[in-house]
Length: 180
Ligand code: IMP
Image 1 (cartoon, rainbow, N blue to C red):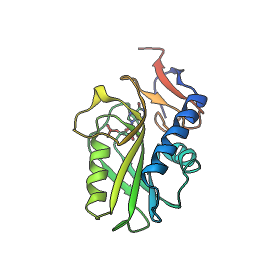
Image 2: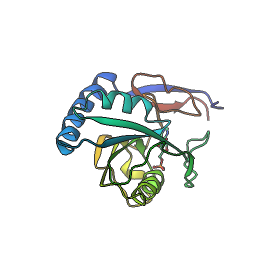
Image 3: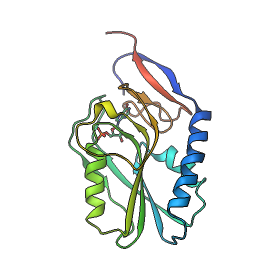
Image 4: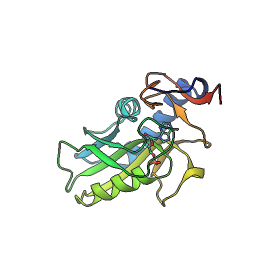
């Protein structure tokens, strides 16, 4: 539970997110056209709303699987140590994989998970992140598709939390602390 009082200022509306996802889904459907073995892997917990909306716009036969990784705990700072809390249920060797992430911040999570999944020898792997904070990057990694570039702000909503709160907001908002 967050310990300091804060308010949330809307940054990206639900309508803008939906419009962007429609475009991204069209590009992804074109890229993977003809595949009969795409596995869409959601990185829990932050991507659960994004993946739900994204897969419903994909014009492809897909399977869905989930992986849980954690690096933030209850703070607004990454620990830089990525722990896998839950692995995939299915095998991805020889399959096409789309890894779905909520935010790429320092990049530690995406780099770690991509390395781990590549070691399982998928036929192809692509990555998508709803949000990208390029100015915060500490390791060299980028997602193949990015929904929105955002500044160095702590954001919540649309699946993304602050100490497990605010995941159910329909928009992306930035956290503004009201007391020092
Ligand atoms: P990275 O390993 O630093 O790139 O962090 C990636 C993960 O940290 C994301 O998947 C989020 O779960 C979390 N994260 C990064 N920035 C934020 C934020 O602004 N709000 C909430 N969670 C964040």
